[in-house]
Image (cartoon, rainbow, N blue to C red):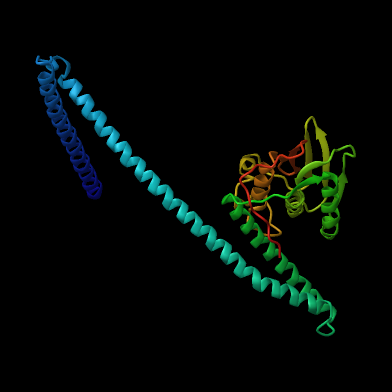
Length: 335
């Protein structure tokens, strides 16, 4: 209670002192203004050899208004300078963060490459024969190295996207070919976890101008995400045309997402609770990165879900030759 009283009294004193200073500044400016006007009056009288009724024009309210205006302009200038300095400091801090994460990620990637190559050589038997148990353990190690590499790539991708440096390789592509490639790449993984991976393609889709690697990354993220939360049933990759847009969707029969969590699905570093144990971890950046990449293509991405029944992620690409936003120069680096 005493601390609150002291804080309150201190605040009153501080506010009172600030008000006194403000009044003093305004009074001083008013005094200076009167002196300037008096000088002007004398000059006009000398020039015209007659009196100028300045006393009828320059009244106390006018002086106060002018003084307050001058004071406000000074404060706005000071505030503008403060904001510019704060912005510069924020930019410096953001650049430092970007440099740190980039350098740290590269430092982590270097030993990972060596570990990955070493495990590969041993698994292939180039370093000598290995038994079944040893091969199983090495396969587990390799999978974890690959997973760590993906996590590092996610952090690098999102950081570079945030910094506004991205480069797209726009070429005429067939979205169905992308869907087929992702299907073939993920089919064995789906089989291993006991889930059916299905492919439904619209055969009449035109070729579009988009970045092959980036859209492959988005679709892979969506299928991988579906596999994390689908223990049985199926996952379906589907393409179709809606008016002047091409739609690509990934639907599953997994645990679904609670209605209250839907607005946070594409938030960065977000990992939503599913009501059960998570099979795998992650950075929580996969969907956030997908949203950014689709946005750069002038498309949109959204999710429909019913908790306990499954989810459907859909993204669109405009049916145009070139639609990628400018201001980018990022090239994704893979392990």
